[in-house]
Image 1: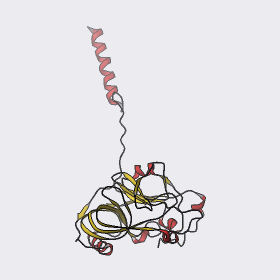
Image 2 (image 1 turned 90 degrees about the vertical axis):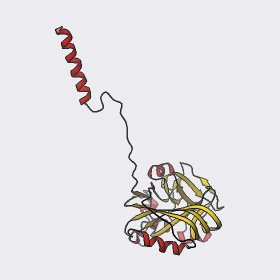
Image 3 (image 1 turned 30 degrees about the vertical axis):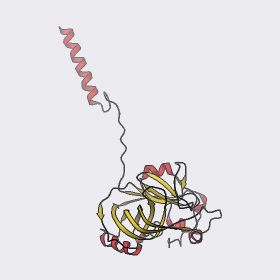
Image 4 (image 1 turned 180 degrees about the vertical axis):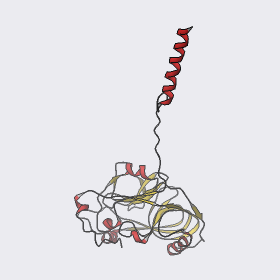
Length: 261
């Protein structure tokens, strides 16, 4: 009887030790926390405007940073649209292509989109009118907002840019070779951002939108529009993370006068 009682006490003591030690007696689970309130940016708009088009970050890495956004590809090759975790490249033929994870981006803005505010602007607004409308519903102009506009558009004017060859021209010269597309009576989604004016040498100030059709077949960088029935969704994003390039070309660029204008 004493032997059995002693054995029971030993077993009970071992059980208590296992429970008391974290991780003992149970499988280990790894949790990955997704930051829905952070805007992740590759490089700066000032560098892009000065002609820095070398890819910096792989698309596979960008996918870990956001499921929504925009940007461009290595060499300024086309317009990038990020929607629902899928990454698309709008080339100069106006068509949308899936982007390989190994592709590199020289400039991009991505976040995990989580709508905070929704509104339905009047039909018939052009780009300028839409900006004025959103200005009226922004809770603040001193922080960042991801913007999604989805529905029907009477008209969309968009563009794409061909890949540039080294030595790279500055952005204003590269845009002289843009291809412009016009879409009429189209269903689609615009993705983009509002960035405060004080970030002008780092981010693209005010509004920056890219477009993709509902069937994910076409799109581009938005130049103008006329709204049909659409819903505007805003996601306030208070944190900005910028991944600066580490190449010698970037480190020795003269960016003191780069305002992004």
